[in-house]
Length: 420
Image 1 (cartoon, rainbow, N blue to C red):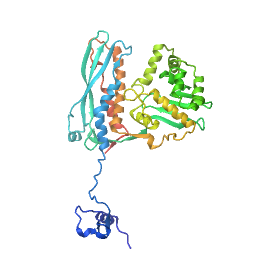
Image 2: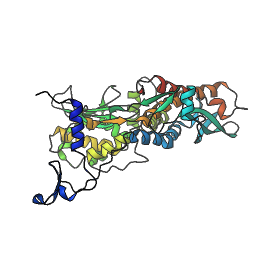
Image 3: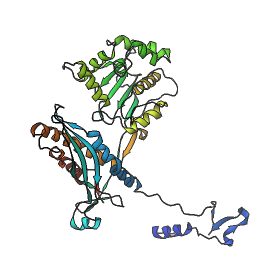
Image 4: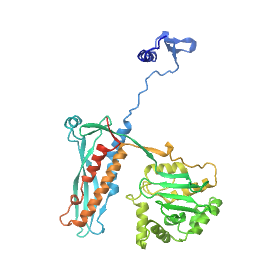
């Protein structure tokens, strides 16, 4: 017997699963409690309504809308104010952002080989620290691409789509120590800034490496964050005597610092070896390394994962994008619990999808905007050194070309920007 053609089979399959909106009395089978049947096929559901398919491009549309409404403005908020190199001449502050209507429609952009974008302007305020004069100006920053209703962009008259990217999540992770078999380590991976690797030595002392530099006792980091004395450190881990005797005690013995200032000097020497630090410099370096959004950002996703992993509601300042003392304490407790093989504690699989996340179009474009603003900041600082301040305005120092250049590069040549 010759096999049925795919077309015939497909047609019959579609016909067999068709469910009419109104069921005839003859379709009901009283022997089966009134279940209805069509051509011998019985249906066990009472609801015969068709399930609506979800909007597949909703993720793209919502992500880019969030970028235009929030992330674009936040990128400027995080980068400003901009000061000159000396910090004594001029400062530029960001005030607000406005996006205008696009000059051309989608059909016009396709016909004329243009970009479908909207002009946007930013308002800045310049403070002349020498004269005390304040000037305010709105500066044209270029065009921000707009998304069509189909989730695409029009670049040089051609439709393009931005592909989502899967990356490793930020946060605090527990892993097996590759150098010390049978031991465990903790990695603190922020969205931006220094990485921290905390590991346990064979004799029990807990050491930390900042950006793969030499190791120092983790108690140095705890003292710098506020647990200044040995008694305060012991009190923080007093819930388990084994933690104190096996790990915290040996770590304190190896730590030569005995105050917060000494701990700050130890961190300064680690991060900037060879530099002579002063009290002001070491305090400033610690503040910029851990609490300056331009230098360090734990990330919103990391804060959520930390709360879920440790099972405690850690109190944090602001929006939780900085590393808190409680994060270190709870992380060390978890690490030592792993070392003692306590039930309920496990290592993380970095390659598991649980520890990865999707970066959608809004976040991808926001990251490129931040790169452009960083270049803009460098140009502004150079101009502050060279140009006279008497007749200067914010537009004298703010150059929009780096921002427009990174957007053009991303939408035009990035691997994540694909032709439709």
